Length: 250
Image: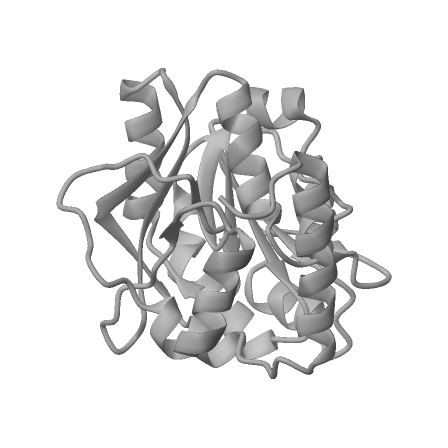
């Protein structure tokens, strides 16, 4: 198995079906697999996916284990030498996924790559980011979710940011397993930054590739109030992350 694509979902049936329709052609190529992790959905997502896409492997979990927990359970089943995680609110293409794998093949010093993420309206998401310290988070709150989510500028060539968000990442299976996987103490939050730090600790680079694009409908699927349960869970995850790395600011 060469490439394993792991898609995480929870109660977003239509978005999930749209995402899988965009990447299902990947299975026409040898050595590819798609694994859907249903993180405790109650809206019939797994049943709909099974009916429309019988070739996909479905892992239906009994509850929501969080982003890291859900992805780890799917990645533990993956057989590919390359592993890719993809949010269910994306529209990708088999060619973009193959190109990410080819980049890793050509750059053995790179352990994780991510494409440019664009909204359906054409906005480029700020998916390549600095350390998510307290000042950075406060700045995002002041700017507002929409403003802080849109990139102010986009490089023309691949760059090495501190981290790339987990909406679309491809990495070596060997690095994933040797790092111990995603930190499940981070239910929802900077598990992506934490994993990128693990990749660099293993002696590999994290690279953002602006010439490869995937559509990410982030404004539709992830909006929430600062007082919501999701915001509180995210705050707890950030505090854990800061304590873990003894690093609160930059």
